[in-house]
Length: 78
Image 1: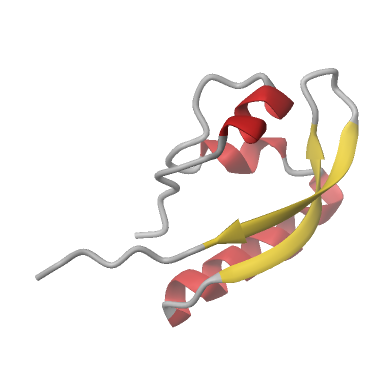
Image 2 (image 1 turned 90 degrees about the horizontal axis):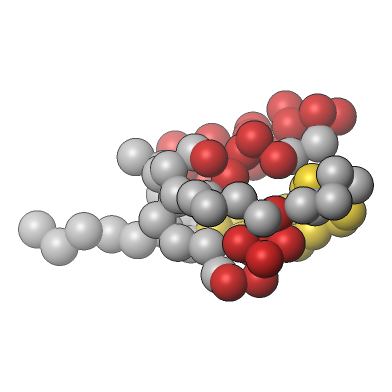
């Protein structure tokens, strides 16, 4: 369904957010990058493929910094 189930420790330390699962990770994408980044994410979900993109992401100090984001599809058995 496209829900994020994992974020590495760096992501938590970088954002200062307590939860980056589900779609919580999308809240910190820079507004100017949001449509493109979410479009890449949605296309990967629909195509059942992994994705890699760069976008500006809000640091816990409030500044935006360029980040490399990757998503890997996890298939459920059955």
